[in-house]
Image (cartoon, rainbow, N blue to C red; front, top):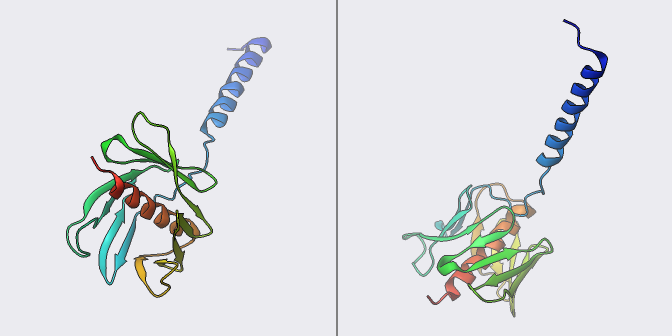
Length: 170
């Protein structure tokens, strides 16, 4: 069976348009946060964990090596869900904003160059360690596994979200 040239041309154009639409729709923004699973330890004890789906656990107020409690959920686009309806977000420039329900968001912290700044407090990530700037020998955590700048940024973001979570009073 022969298809008339004009019908064949119409089908070809329609299929090409569908293909172009599929390709353009499939191009998404690159992930802002690296959600590969991560464990952070302190003196051999797990103090924080990130799962591939963005859920976190931390020792919180518990002693290192004891029970971990559920923490905030971090999404690859930089949005963060905390308890009590509180949300936060990481902007592409490294600024972190927190928001209580029904209130405008507030600037909380900034991550840049493996450095987390929360008001006067500075936390650094270098190599596989996370530490306070003012106490260079004080390691507050070690990132397990292969570590690169994206992993360090994620560890610092986890640290910031745990600080936000501890500030929630509900």
